Length: 87
Image 1 (tube, rainbow, N blue to C red):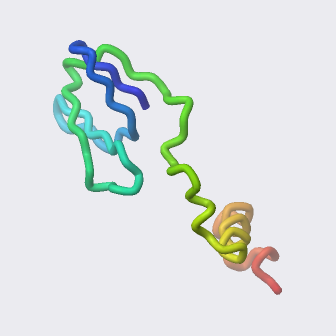
Image 2 (image 1 turned 60 degrees about the vertical axis):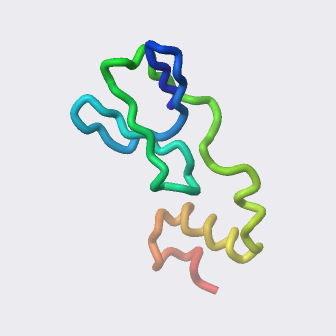
């Protein structure tokens, strides 16, 4: 999400919680504890970002068999008994 405040500040990230007047936003997927509080009373606009928060090159850190396991998991919807997991 792209959050613009009335004072022109722009916060981009995933809204993870609402707490009173605060909107808690995770701005870095690799640092889930790095949260930013945004006062909802000062929000001018909230819009969907056209850019994914996934870090560039994240898939490059996986080996081929790890990628195949990930794809099988997603396609099987996590069902460990699915035919995709039979060798």
